Length: 151
Image: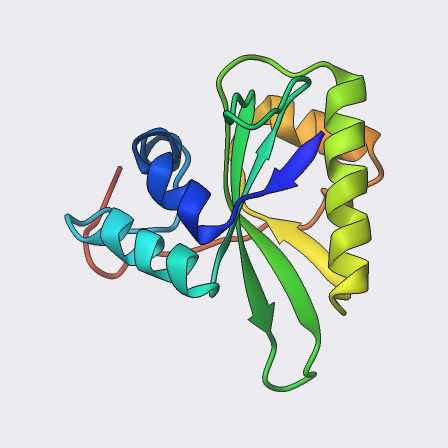
């Protein structure tokens, strides 16, 4: 089950969300001291969305996975894509849970007018699972760092 968190839930569970984001920042993002504060501001303002997934989500949030999404629009084509900004699992997810969570996200994204869902990853297991679910995984993002920043 995948659940979208509201501002009150985000504020209440920020320590866990922050922990997950710090461990799953996209590979191209430069880590700086204010990064998680900016993410929190964007989550609370609705510019980003926080999702939790798991098998037993009740009133008290208990999650196996925390995902942050960010809407993107290409100014040239005006195509809308939902970027999975970060995805962190507290434990390995079985294939059925992956499938259920991403089916729910897909339905939500279609209803919100997005044309695609995209993500950055350098995790082989995520690539393999995404390919099994029908994601196009053959495109590669390449970059050259001009700042000397390395992780």
